[in-house]
Length: 277
Image (cartoon, rainbow, N blue to C red; front, top):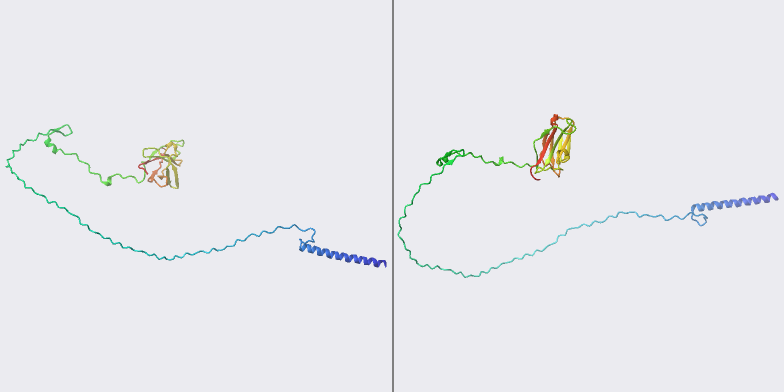
């Protein structure tokens, strides 16, 4: 009987463990499904509410349509009639009164004869070369011919540009490069011969274009400029002109041919102002 009693005890313990195991598994499943349950001894922290941002919704705005409605306008026309009244005026007429006068006629006497006198002899004249000629022969002296009047076509016309260039001059280079130099230099002067710095001078040539300002080359004075064109004298043709403050030309294009010798490796161009602008 002793072994059977122990077998019953073991069966009871086994059933109890099975029941506890099922209970534990049910508890675990409950906690996993709802961690916030009151049976959970270690509940998770409460999360803050999720912020829901508003969604922008486009709402079309109705557009009002304005319709022109004709408006009737009444126009009153008033006709004025002017009445003129003539007022008679008195006119006084003066009648001249003629008084008869007596006219005495005196006898006419013969007028005395008019005395005649010979004109005085004219003084001798000098013909300008020291010869004394008779005044009566003065009309025979031929007058010096007068120059014909100048026609409007022969009158000098003002240049369309306020700056004109004098004839190009040539000289040898005076700096340290000596003959190993080629340039076009010059000056810009005003109406009274004063230097005008700050005016743009543009040069154009074959594959060459540059703008310098007057006064940038100190050795040519306050209004001087100089374009360095190479390291040896050679013959080439360039055009120069002066530009105003607005960037438009204020002088005509000047064609300059550079010198081909050491004595002519600097071409000098002078722009002179001829009228205001």
